[in-house]
Each structure stands twice: as C-alpha cells, then as structure tokens.
Length: 408
Image (cartoon, rainbow, N blue to C red; front, side, top):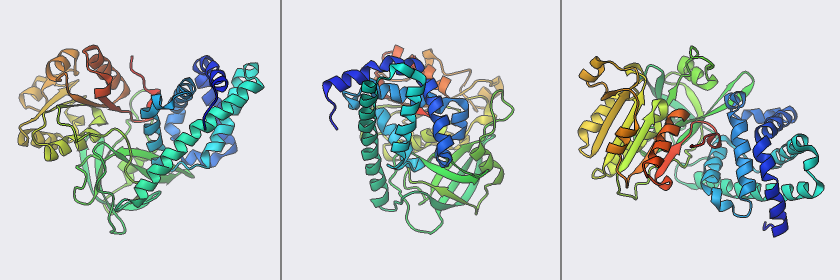
C-alpha cells in the first residue's frame, strides 16, 4: 500500500498525541483486547504486562511507526527485531486485525474528540500498511525456518540431555531433539530460542539465548537465570522458577526454532568488544566461542560485570577460552568483590566497568556487542557514544520488550 501525501500528513499530525498519551493508550488497548480475547494471553509475557514494559514498548513502536509512516525503512532494525520476536512466539497474520481493532478503540477512548472521522480513516490506512509490513517479513522468517535443514514450524519437543549449575542463579540446559531428527545447526551466534510451558491454565513463553558455538554437538545449550524473590519489587519468573525447581535431565521442553537479530558478524575482521552484565553473558558466550573457534586471528576484548564470584557464570569456560586463545582478552569485574578475589584471579577489578576502562581497552574501530540489565546497557552505550564510537558499530540485546529501552 502507498499512502498519499494528505493521508501521511494526517497520520503525522497524530504523533504528538501518541507520544504524550502512548502508555495510557496501550494500557487501555491490552485491557480491552485481553477481555475480548483471553486466549492471546498465551502469547504475551505476563511479567512484562505486570511491570508495564510491554505497554511502554508498544507505545514507543506505535509512535515511531506513525512518525516514520512515509518511510518505514527508517525503523527497519526495530521492525526486524520485533518480527523475530513475533515469530519466536508464534504470532500469525490473523492476530493483526484483532490488535488493530482494539488499538484503534483505545486511541479513540483516550484521545476523544481529537480523533475525527478523517483522522480515524487515515490511522486505519496507516495501521494496515504497518501490519502488512510485519506480516510479510514474518512470513518470510517462518518460511526460512521451516524450509532450512533441520527446520520446523511452531514448537518442537526437546529432551534435556544435561543440566549444569553455571552460577548460583543460572542453570544451563543442553537440549536435543526428542525425535532424534536434525535440528537447525547453522543459527547465528547471539540468537535465542523460545521455551513454552503450561502453568495455571495458560501457556507461558520465554526466550533464552543460545550460548554455544552453532553446530556444536547437534544440540542447543541455553542458560536460565532464576529471578530472585528476595530482591525488592521483584517476583519469581514463572518459567525460570519452573525450570530451576522442576526441570531435570530426561525431561521434555517445547522449543521454537532459533531467532533474533543480535548476532555476531563473522564476515568482518575488525576487533570485537563484548560487554556483558549478569545473565547478559549468555548470548555473549556464543559470540566469544564462535570468534575464538572460527576467527582465531580476530582481536577480542571481553568485559564481564557481576556482583561477586557466586554469580560469575561460565567462570571455568571463560578462563579456558582466554588462556587458549592469544587474541582474546578477558576482564572480569566484581561489584562486591574482595582483595582475595583479585589475588585468586577470580576477577580482574573490584567495582563496575567504567569510562576509563572502556576508553583504554575498546578500539575505535571495534564492533561492540552489549548485553545485560537495562541500566548497565544504558551506561555502557551512552559512554561509548560520548567516546566517539558510532552507533552503527554498537549492537545490543534487551531481555524483554526492546522498544521500552532507550539510550540517553
């Protein structure tokens, strides 16, 4: 669909109102849609709904799409990220008219008389154009996943081959196809799979990063962090607690095909900087292992920040990788570390990754990959930008709705 200039102008006139009232609109939207279609709760993350992250992300995406309605390629990276998430969750073309209906009703409810018949008509045209773009891209992703060697549609049973506690709060699971048939082995380092469990009458879907070299052992390895219930304002994640408490070797999990756009580009040869905080090490492990194995001459700087040695995931693996690869430099930061940790070489520094360390160790021509808690990523990316690293060389992954994340 090609929109005429007057319609584009009308849609863009709605942008300030969408920006001001976006969260109110999307909160109303989800309430209306779930009331009419409770089955869609099987697709959406209940924790992100509860915490308001999903509402914020949708508000940002609606605003961004309206602001760029004359050239959606301007937000193509975000569109690709969301499309991959949608495919990992099983979003289908028939879901888009439902979303459009209740999003439009929510806009009318919140904005009231601002939504004239002319504006309503223009918005519906814009939504059709935006949804068509997503549907087309997602159908392409589904087709590629299903047609490639070892590919499949939807969710497939995998058996837990082994289980390993890699940190106090993180368990790694090695998964193999229950039917013994091939799986997609040429996924990209940094991608994730979605795990589906049934609990409390709903299906719950969560993405977990693959943390091994693509093609390793004909299995997938994921790492799952348990959400600490003792920390203020946090509750245990339904899926992570189920996996930590109940899933053991020999059990079966339903798993989607690999997806995601936060991936290491192995066609490049410039230096790589990998910045991880906490469980953000999981996709970084896949990248680190891949570059060490497939590009042994490529310079790599890894900086990994955790609270203390109890939460230092993959400690032995990281040590072996750094010792076995001359071009890999590994620096570990313990926020609550001790002098003994430094003396025992459990960590390199006490404290956090700071601007001085980044300026000294990250080459200006590096491809930088950042993953971790939102505050960690915001500090890392903002600091790198101030130090002159171009945004096109900074890549990041958000655990949760991506468009609820912003860099100051």
